[in-house]
Amino acid sequence: MIKRYLGLPLIWLGLLLSVTSQASVLTLPAQVALENIGTRLLLLEDVRGNLDINEVRAPSRETLWKPVTESIPSYGYSKSVYWLYVAVQPEKQIDSRYHLEIAYPVLDDVQVYTFHNDTLVSHQVMGDRLPFRERPMEHANFIAPLDVAGDGVTHIYLRIHTTSAVQLPISLYSSEELFEAKNAESAGHSLYYGAMLVMTLYNLLIFASLRDISYFYCAMYIVSMGLLMASIQGLTYMYLWPSNVRLNDAALVLSLSGMIFFPTLFFRSFLALPQTRPVLAKILLVLTGLSFFTALGGLFLPYRFMIVTTMLIVLGAIAMGFISGILRWRDGYHAAKFFNIAWIFMFSAGVLMALNKFDVLPSNWFTRNVGQIGATLEVVLLSLALASRMNFAQRMRTLAQQETADAQRKLLDIQIRQNEELDRQVRRRTAELEEANAQLKHISDTDGLTQVLNRRAFEEAFEREYKRAHRQGTPLSVVMVDLDHFKQINDQHGHPFGDLCLVSTAHIITENIRRPPDIAARYGGEEFVILLPGTRLSGAVAVAEKIQKALASGTVRDHTHSVRLTASIGVACHIPSLVTERDRLLEEADQALYQAKHEGRNRVVRYLAEA
Image 1: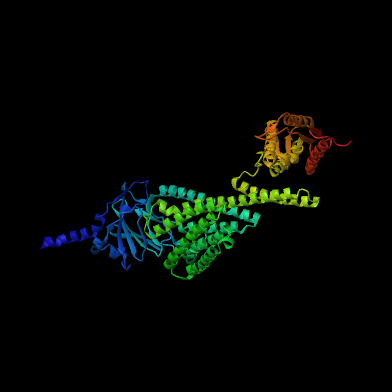
Image 2: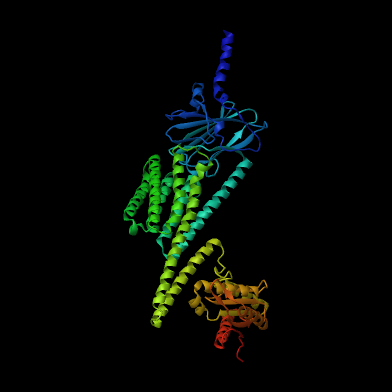
């Protein structure tokens, strides 16, 4: 009898430890980074959601604990409460601090219980429905510091309940490894959101330049896409509204609604659907209206209902965009090609993302980031589509202008001037577009045709060099080069050959100015300017004569045309006494150039001040 009663405590202890017997103890070295440890966990699904920590630890629940078979547990949209368990101990028998991370910031309720020697050591509560400042660590993901005792096993229980999709990428880090992992993660975020910001500004700049509403819709679509990704990654809650729990709960629905509202407007405008496919235009307008109601519903209706409804409408909008693009491609609309390729990426990413959230596809790095990957590719391709449409329209305008010029060549001078003004407007609009692209690529200083500096870059350099010459009391020379009879060359041989002449001229100029401070730039249509710091008038004239002789002695030819170029060149030099006299140096070089024209062209004229 006594032996029987003495054995009861051992039986009871065995029952208490029965849960831990199903999972091996994780031995943690001092520096550790264990990512996606799902297969090292045990799971208990509380369908009714009424169990507390003492009840799930009770021996009677031992059979309910099951090993997790996925590295990233994923259970779709579920009303159940999920309990997870893992036992850990430090490799060295000293007290250590580790960090448990759940890298899915949209979970509503996350509770972490830590037990040592059957005593509750800590109970940490997190979730996206709690103010951000209440988190144990200020990070977009849920990170719970764990103080692991060195004299035994520490038992960790997680309680998860959420109205969003249940996805649990759980990792364990030491402090240093956590710091390194989060730095790498931040670098990736910076690259992605930096790219989204650049593409947004690019489209807004072109919208401001061309007043084409398609670019505005595209920019707002990119903003909505960025907000969606930032909401999924918990960045909006961390940086934008850390105290507004209600807004954070609705952020995903609001950003998804934006992913319906702006893309549908973009489809209608970019593909010209109201004029070509009015039925599709009306369907897209209905989807636009639905997005307004989903945004309102996100603020007032249950989250789970609204997120599922909104995702289904998003898939419908993606499908309609794809159908619209295919039909417009069949109509012969040139820009629809890039649009369709972009939408294939977005359609695929949207379907994969939805299937992942509904637990049809497993949760892994690709399925969790497929939206971000698809969005990046889509934004790049949509920008190409917009550029293709713009280039096509520009070519059509240029062709129309040329045909008009041919038909009206014999009209009055006023009509010719009107055509020239129209051509200047097209050139100005093209220059504005080139400026926007140049800002994006950080190469705004180069003339696209001749590969020498453009006028804006020259003027900046000229102002800088003039001030330097003023400070140092050194000479500064300017050489103006203007091709003779260039308009006649264009009219007789065509603009492509004219462009070849300009490129050849720029090459000859750059070949004859070899000093590092010397600068060559395309100043106008067929006019070039050379800046020679530290060069007196005689030296500048020598450079100009070399260029004039090189042009006159060479021949520009293509497969059908051959032309010997000549140029009129004006040279002027200052030793600046006043910074404000900068423009006068250019005027003097220009006067010398026009004197060269007046004297018969194909010559170099230096500016000599009147006595």
